[in-house]
Length: 400
Image 1 (cartoon, one colour):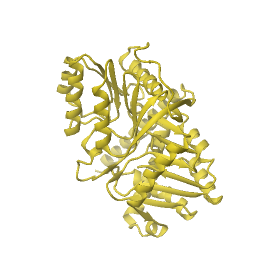
Image 2 (tube, helix red, strand yellow; image 1 turned 90 degrees about the vertical axis):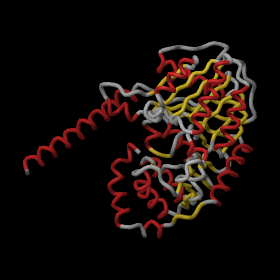
Image 3 (cartoon, rainbow, N blue to C red; image 1 turned 30 degrees about the vertical axis):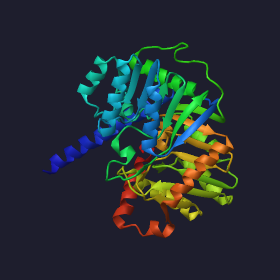
Image 4 (cartoon, rainbow, N blue to C red; image 1 turned 180 degrees about the vertical axis):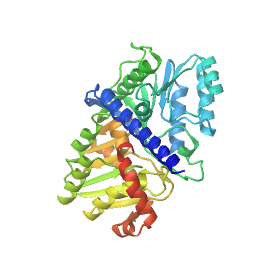
C-alpha cells in the first residue's frame, strides 16, 4: 500500500513538472516572437453601454442595416435564450445575402452545439474556432485564449468591450443577478482597428486573407481622441503602468479580477505613498474559485497603504476600466490580472477625451453607489479557511 502511494505521488509530481516545462517553454517560444504593439491613435465617436439589454438591442438594430458583411468574435457564445435569438437573427441576415463571419474561442465557447455549427454553415455563415490546442506545448496553448468580444458591421460600425453572448450577461441567470459591464459602440476611425484585428485573427484561424475597400471603407473622423491597442501576451503591462504612473490626484480601477503583477502593485503602492487617492471596485460575488482568494493578498497590501476598496453587491461586476485623474481612461476586454497581461489576446482602448471620460466616470459613480466598502478589518475577519485559500491560491497568480 505504501509503495502504491509513493508511486502515485511520483507520477503526480512528474505530471506537474511536465506541465510546467510545457507551459514555460511554450510561453518563451511563442510570446517571444511578438513585439509590444504600438497604440493606434484615432478620432472615434463612442456610445457607452453598461446594460446587456441595451447593448443587444443596439447591436441588432445596427446589424439589421448591414449591406455587405457582419464580423463577430466572442470569447463566450452560449446557445441559450439570447444565444438562440442571435443565431436566428444572423441566419435571417445571411439569407438576405449579408456575408457573416463568426470567430469563437475554442475553450470559452466549447459548448456551442455541433448541429448549430452545421446549420450556420448550411446558411453560408463561416465559423472559426480561435486558439485551438496545439502539440507540442499543449498546456501552454490551452492557456492562450482569444478574449475578444468584437463586432464589425460593413467596416463602418464597431462594438467591443466586456459583454459576451449568454443569458447571464443580460441578468437572466438568477444566481448571478444583474450583470454590470461596459461595452462601446464605435463610429469613425477606430472601427478600422477592430476590423484589422478581426481579419488578422480570421487569417490565422481560417487560413484566409481578406482585404480591400469592402472591409476598409473611408471613415469620418469621430468626436473623441482615443488609441486602440490589440495585445497578445506582451506590452499591456507596460501600457497600464505608463498610464497609472501619471496619476496626480486620483485613480479609479474597476475590474472583476484583481491580480496585479509585482511591478504594477509597486506602482499602486507608490501612488498611495504620494497621497494619490486610489479606489478599487470589485464584485462581491465570485465566479472563479481561485482569483478572489488570491486577490486578498494584493488588496491587503493596498488597504494598509490607504487604498479604498468597494465590493459591488447588486449582481456581478464585470467591467474593465480605469480612470487617471481627468486625463486618461482605459476601457476594453482586459481584466486587471496576469492572465490578461500575459496570456490572452485582448482589445484595449485608451481614451483622452475629457467629455467621454466624464461619461465613464458617471457610470463608475453609479456603480460605487451600489457597492459596499471592504476594509482592513473585513480582511482580518476572514475565516481561517478563507485565509488558507488565499495562501494556496497565491502561487497560481501568474495563471489567474
